[in-house]
Length: 268
Image (cartoon, rainbow, N blue to C red):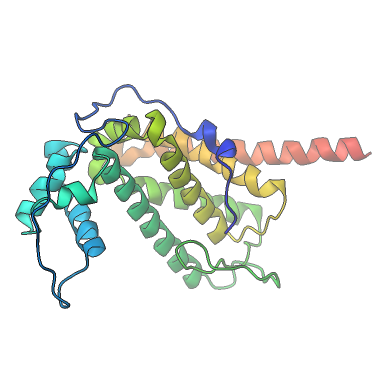
């Protein structure tokens, strides 16, 4: 997978001022609480697995404690995980819980997109170009046969990804606020880039020139705009959000076609 320069995604990060930032969301970890010593046998889970389990469990406590260490502490207590694990799993505070949630949902997206394409029968065209597996280990499928199929896939993928934040939707503005803090912007950019790259890879994108960057930047712009609309949408089943998404996908296609038309005019 190509590495996306941060410069191409600096416009993706929107400053969200209506979220409540928890007290442990400082730019960097100011202190670490002492961790009780525990003996881990060969049969016990390794530390990384324990941290992942604790962070997963902490998501259900976000409504009560927000994106904070308190949520992880509650999860550790409920799951009988080692005391003090929160200082290892969340050394930077609430932002570590946010980035864990974001990346885990990107992984769910990757799995779902790979399943969709595996179920496709004859919707894509073959390609002789060798494409390596993406960051989640899924091999990119061939491109779709038509632009309409590609646009439908992009819409479906973005809609699925947005639905993955429904479980924490009332508290997502707070998470966006944490991601917009200056020290957290690089992580936010990387996660957004990972998201849109996964969608385009599973759409069968074979770009190797500047179009590779343009497609991902354009889709990231569509995703971010729709996300901001989504968190404020009160319509039944977010119908207004999906209509908004349709319009943005159409805008993206129109911009692409206008660019091609201008190029043809210059060549004449």
